[in-house]
Length: 327
Image (cartoon, rainbow, N blue to C red; front, side, top):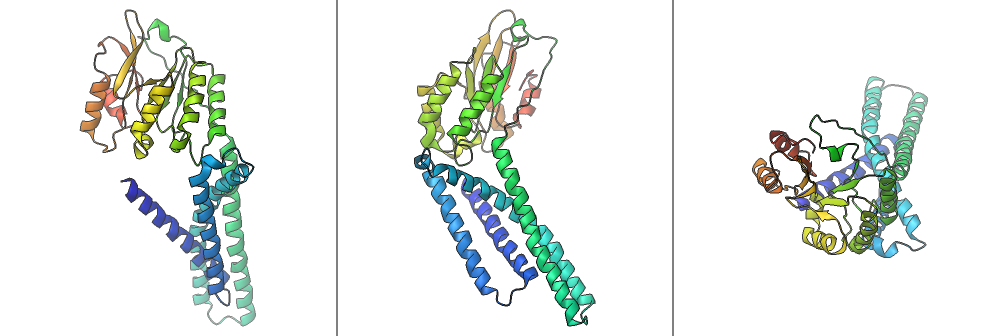
């Protein structure tokens, strides 16, 4: 499935880049197109090579004088690609408009045709400048901005220990090419500023497994500052890489509670509180989810208050069926 996704993604990317340049040249109408194609292919090839070098060597580059520049180049690459794909539909509309005008006014004097060509050349230049420029700005702004959302929940049967209890959820951090250790440090600092009683990490923590030792060190320091600790469940990306390696590292080197179709009791009393965590179902089948959630809830009394951690929202269905109060 992962290989198929990569093939489809690469095909879409290639078609988009080729289509963008073909539409641009169709509007610009240079006397010879082949030099423009050769130059474009060289630039795109060099760009792909640089991005691949960054992804493969990110861990070694981290902390060197070159890393900030490569990091900026990576962010700009996102802006460039988004801008290219945003420009394509505009180019298609302009191309259809150009073709229609030429069909209707095919006998227009040459001086008018020259003005028409100049207009569409200008448009062909402005459109990618606007889309790529805007997307690049958004990419850099988004890279710096972390949004914290707050949700409050009220229950008639809330156990006393959960009154004003604050849980911070971190999910889909994806430490790797897009989010590095500096970004992760900022995320953890922001989480601490919320002064939570507990933190839950609901999957897709890391993509660059070479950074597992550093991530474990940070999580150990972080967990010691959380009064009731940190709970972790798996996401799909842990399975895409090496789920056993991730689990082994986190279990051995961090104090986090690792919940793989399992649960822990966090409060006692007449109405005890449990946190249950389910793994990720790569097959996306209800029978699999049923088996996972049943195993995760095993041993929990019917009268307990349960908090279910799940990476995929499909588990909401099974959670509602079992009347779990918080998922």
